[in-house]
Length: 163
Image 1 (spheres, rainbow, N blue to C red):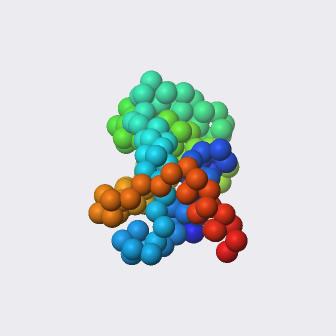
Image 2: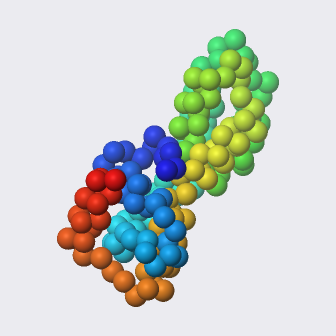
């Protein structure tokens, strides 16, 4: 089973249905698919985490980084801020903040723009994975012409818990 980033809370649909989401090959007829409503909910959750950032938070990120590495002085905070904004504009605020927290915990030295970009890129790919699986199951639903009721969801979950 895929490991989901900590950004997904235990109450999120993505976390609650991760076992069923990542289980089996959606294209095999014997694979049980999640209900369309759950799949659409997962896609909406992922979309919330992948909305591009409001660039006004970048100066705050730079101040957080600078404050976390007090022995490091930025040569030009303005240039670093602009470079960071350009590199991170496609990522969401939760992704950026999560990566910054991890880098502060793990790196002894002030990160480069590339360090932050690569961290965000990896986090964003991991976050987007459930959406890919959900879209694949939706496509399989369309191909099969199937939709599950809430009662059927419980039966599927009970079967999976028995395994």
